[in-house]
Length: 347
Image 1 (cartoon, rainbow, N blue to C red):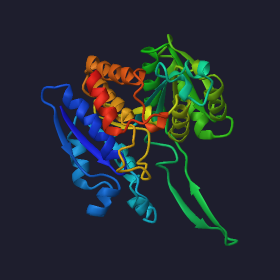
Image 2 (cartoon, one colour):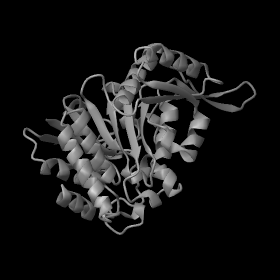
Image 3 (cartoon, rainbow, N blue to C red):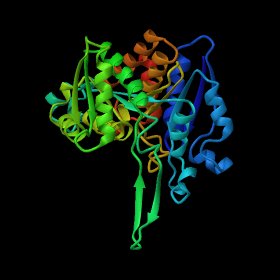
């Protein structure tokens, strides 16, 4: 079980350390952890946010545990050298095309949400986001128009096979849950979205047991606040998925609780919390490691096939929260290591 640990910047090393403690506590036979630099720390050491040696370690692993990237000291660099390019590079080079972001309210945390407790308590959804296309990977640039004005431009595009591939992931996920899939697009305005909708409808014929619906992204954003309990699985493109999944995190109470998995067509996956590097609290021991620990649970489930171990870790996190162990993000006073200790005790 070869795991690449790419802790990254800011609070990344702090929260990743607690997830590693959990993995080691499971006494998994053959567990081998290899550490490598990524993001701003890698740029400062090598001149690039994704050094070739880091990419090679990731490529030769069964799974990747990822912390976070982002360093204000790198904000003035050319875009291809900024820390955030490391995660985009890993997705592209390793074929990590499907991002799974579950969102549900843990029992006892209904009041932590900005929504009414009875609304928040109904949240139990999965967002399936396409990762290798859309404006993030399209051609882009800044040009000067004939009248002297500067214009920024980004190309949004999807090929039918890219949509078909992520649609299958969404339908299969819905099969294993409550059998409902909502495809989110902007087909009333964007040709890219019209193709997306057409292909999703074609794929739906292979999954007659799944109830398919369509929703424009602006309405989906509203419905996530108005009635999030209506959603089971949402499948959407890269840009819309990025925005909606962050919105869903605050609907459940804290961005510090949401895990994610980025999967390839094989078993290789990259697992990370959805929060950023939070440089304002880095090194202070304040960060909530639960999202990273839950990401490690997804690693156990999706890349290593250890469903029972994954459920064990998730139950330990749920019990920790139920017992009142809260980080500052949830109005509590427990620090990073104290939360990790509490999870290990319940594990």
